[in-house]
Amino acid sequence: MSRVHRLEVRVYYEDTDFSGVVYHASYLRFMERGRTELIRALGIAQRELFDGETALGFAVRKMTIDFLRPAVMDDLLTIETRSIAARGATMDLEQRVLRGEEVLITAQVMVACVGGGRARRIPDGLRKRLMLDD
Image (cartoon, rainbow, N blue to C red; front, side, top):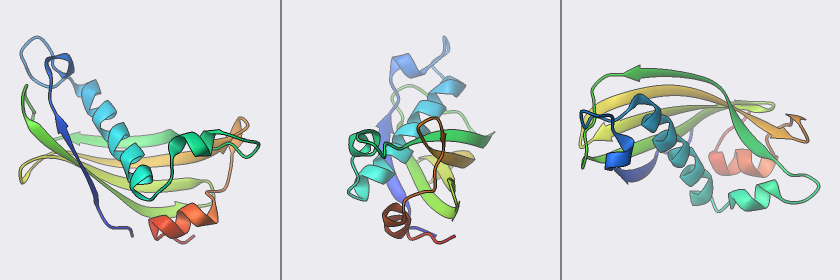
Protein backbone atom coordinates (compact mmCIF):
# COMPACT_ATOMS: atom_id res chain seq x y z
CA MET A 1 0.00 0.00 0.00
CA SER A 2 1.36 3.42 -0.93
CA ARG A 3 1.50 6.51 1.21
CA VAL A 4 -1.35 8.99 1.07
CA HIS A 5 -1.11 11.81 -1.47
CA ARG A 6 -2.94 15.02 -0.50
CA LEU A 7 -4.19 17.77 -2.78
CA GLU A 8 -5.97 20.93 -1.62
CA VAL A 9 -8.91 22.16 -3.70
CA ARG A 10 -10.97 25.30 -3.14
CA VAL A 11 -14.70 25.11 -3.88
CA TYR A 12 -15.75 27.76 -6.40
CA TYR A 13 -19.16 28.90 -7.56
CA GLU A 14 -18.83 26.74 -10.70
CA ASP A 15 -18.55 23.63 -8.48
CA THR A 16 -21.89 24.20 -6.78
CA ASP A 17 -25.58 23.88 -7.53
CA PHE A 18 -28.13 26.67 -7.16
CA SER A 19 -28.01 26.42 -3.33
CA GLY A 20 -24.24 26.81 -2.99
CA VAL A 21 -23.68 23.11 -2.17
CA VAL A 22 -21.09 21.19 -4.19
CA TYR A 23 -22.77 19.41 -7.08
CA HIS A 24 -22.16 15.65 -6.89
CA ALA A 25 -20.32 15.48 -10.25
CA SER A 26 -17.80 18.08 -9.07
CA TYR A 27 -16.39 15.52 -6.66
CA LEU A 28 -15.50 13.34 -9.66
CA ARG A 29 -13.35 16.17 -11.04
CA PHE A 30 -11.73 16.76 -7.65
CA MET A 31 -10.87 13.06 -7.32
CA GLU A 32 -9.55 12.91 -10.91
CA ARG A 33 -7.18 15.75 -10.03
CA GLY A 34 -6.11 13.81 -6.95
CA ARG A 35 -5.27 10.71 -9.01
CA THR A 36 -3.43 12.81 -11.61
CA GLU A 37 -1.39 14.62 -8.96
CA LEU A 38 -0.51 11.30 -7.30
CA ILE A 39 1.12 10.19 -10.56
CA ARG A 40 2.84 13.59 -10.97
CA ALA A 41 4.17 13.41 -7.39
CA LEU A 42 5.89 10.13 -8.34
CA GLY A 43 7.86 12.02 -11.00
CA ILE A 44 5.78 10.77 -13.93
CA ALA A 45 4.38 13.32 -16.36
CA GLN A 46 1.03 12.17 -17.71
CA ARG A 47 1.95 13.65 -21.11
CA GLU A 48 4.95 11.28 -21.27
CA LEU A 49 2.65 8.30 -20.72
CA PHE A 50 0.46 9.38 -23.66
CA ASP A 51 3.30 9.87 -26.17
CA GLY A 52 5.15 7.33 -28.30
CA GLU A 53 4.53 3.80 -29.49
CA THR A 54 3.88 2.51 -25.99
CA ALA A 55 1.36 5.24 -25.14
CA LEU A 56 -0.63 4.47 -22.01
CA GLY A 57 -3.47 6.11 -20.15
CA PHE A 58 -5.75 5.32 -17.25
CA ALA A 59 -9.52 4.92 -17.46
CA VAL A 60 -11.87 4.58 -14.53
CA ARG A 61 -13.39 1.12 -14.73
CA LYS A 62 -15.39 1.13 -11.51
CA MET A 63 -16.10 3.61 -8.73
CA THR A 64 -18.11 3.34 -5.53
CA ILE A 65 -18.76 6.63 -3.75
CA ASP A 66 -20.27 7.37 -0.35
CA PHE A 67 -21.51 10.96 -0.05
CA LEU A 68 -21.37 11.52 3.71
CA ARG A 69 -21.56 15.30 4.14
CA PRO A 70 -21.87 18.26 1.75
CA ALA A 71 -19.19 20.81 0.97
CA VAL A 72 -20.16 24.39 0.21
CA MET A 73 -18.79 27.34 -1.71
CA ASP A 74 -15.41 28.64 -0.44
CA ASP A 75 -14.60 25.45 1.50
CA LEU A 76 -10.98 24.33 1.32
CA LEU A 77 -11.01 20.59 0.72
CA THR A 78 -8.27 18.01 0.89
CA ILE A 79 -8.37 15.17 -1.63
CA GLU A 80 -6.54 12.11 -0.27
CA THR A 81 -5.51 9.38 -2.72
CA ARG A 82 -3.85 6.08 -1.90
CA SER A 83 -3.10 3.20 -4.26
CA ILE A 84 -3.84 -0.06 -2.48
CA ALA A 85 -3.44 -2.89 -5.00
CA ALA A 86 -2.56 -3.75 -8.59
CA ARG A 87 -3.46 -6.74 -10.72
CA GLY A 88 -2.17 -6.90 -14.26
CA ALA A 89 -3.79 -3.93 -15.99
CA THR A 90 -5.89 -2.64 -13.08
CA MET A 91 -5.14 -0.67 -9.96
CA ASP A 92 -7.34 -0.11 -6.91
CA LEU A 93 -7.28 3.21 -5.11
CA GLU A 94 -8.95 4.67 -2.06
CA GLN A 95 -9.89 8.33 -2.07
CA ARG A 96 -11.34 10.64 0.55
CA VAL A 97 -12.49 14.24 0.41
CA LEU A 98 -12.07 16.09 3.68
CA ARG A 99 -12.86 19.52 5.07
CA GLY A 100 -10.30 19.83 7.83
CA GLU A 101 -10.58 16.55 9.72
CA GLU A 102 -14.19 15.95 8.65
CA VAL A 103 -14.62 13.20 6.02
CA LEU A 104 -17.14 14.30 3.39
CA ILE A 105 -16.68 11.65 0.68
CA THR A 106 -15.12 8.19 0.49
CA ALA A 107 -14.53 6.37 -2.77
CA GLN A 108 -13.17 3.04 -3.93
CA VAL A 109 -11.79 3.40 -7.46
CA MET A 110 -10.55 0.83 -9.95
CA VAL A 111 -8.61 2.21 -12.90
CA ALA A 112 -7.48 0.27 -15.95
CA CYS A 113 -4.23 0.94 -17.77
CA VAL A 114 -5.03 1.15 -21.48
CA GLY A 115 -3.07 1.63 -24.68
CA GLY A 116 -3.94 1.19 -28.32
CA GLY A 117 -7.58 0.65 -27.46
CA ARG A 118 -7.00 -2.29 -25.09
CA ALA A 119 -5.93 -3.12 -21.56
CA ARG A 120 -2.18 -3.09 -20.88
CA ARG A 121 -0.21 -4.29 -17.88
CA ILE A 122 0.75 -1.46 -15.55
CA PRO A 123 4.47 -0.83 -16.19
CA ASP A 124 6.80 -2.29 -13.55
CA GLY A 125 8.46 1.11 -12.99
CA LEU A 126 5.12 2.66 -12.10
CA ARG A 127 4.25 -0.27 -9.82
CA LYS A 128 7.50 0.20 -7.94
CA ARG A 129 6.93 3.95 -7.53
CA LEU A 130 3.43 3.24 -6.26
CA MET A 131 4.88 0.58 -3.92
CA LEU A 132 2.54 -2.05 -5.36
CA ASP A 133 3.05 -5.69 -6.27
CA ASP A 134 0.77 -8.10 -8.10
